[in-house]
Amino acid sequence: MSIFSFPGCLFNRHRPQRRGVSWDGRQYIGECRDCGEPIQRHGRRDWRKRKIESEDTEGVPSST
Image (spheres, rainbow, N blue to C red):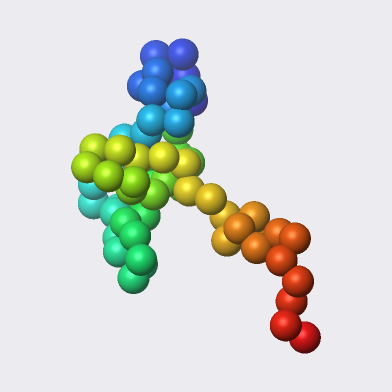
């Protein structure tokens, strides 16, 4: 990310690459056009850094 990139990325406000946005069955996901991070849509014009699936399940006991 260059110094002249969108400053919102520093505050977890991202802008998606519109052609790369897809629906995964639960939410819209894509990649930030400024910093390249994986992002997800939280609302209209509200894109945030996407949480990794493994982070969501940390500390949860497995069923095996």
